[in-house]
Amino acid sequence: MLNNLEYLQLGLSISFGFIWFWFAFPSGRWWMPFSGPFFSLLFRSIVIGGMGFASTTCVSLIHRNIEKEIDRVRVDMHRQRGQKFAPPTPESVEWLNSLTSVIWGLINPQMVCNNPNIHQADFPDWSIVYFYRRHG
Image 1 (spheres, rainbow, N blue to C red):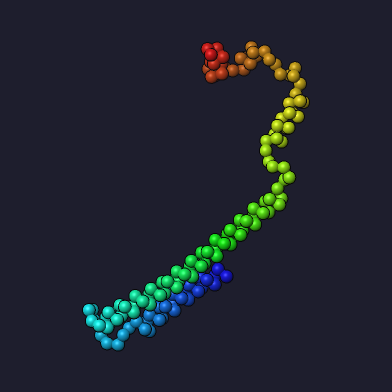
Image 2 (tube, rainbow, N blue to C red):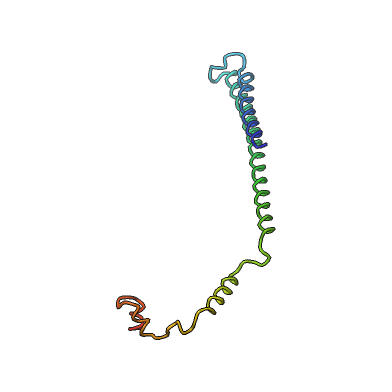
């Protein structure tokens, strides 16, 4: 349907071109400036051109409104599909908290060494952590 509106715009433009060619030229000396036939040609050209511009603009606005409506419907359909297949509970960090508690429960507390001398040996003298611990 949208392609038909584009063809309608093209057809209107060509039609108004033919209408201008057949009806804009008056009989007489229309090629002479500041003569009666010249102003008749100018007036007819303005009227026919304005009508052609207005009609193609109306078709273009209708085309744009239909495209916006189609996009709105498409977005609404995507939203509805997303709500239909969404999990029953909302996403949050609860799954991360439960995973952390399970993994933390598996760690043996004696494997973790709380001796600060061993931790300080891991950092070289130039590290920020070592400097902060020594001078902070």
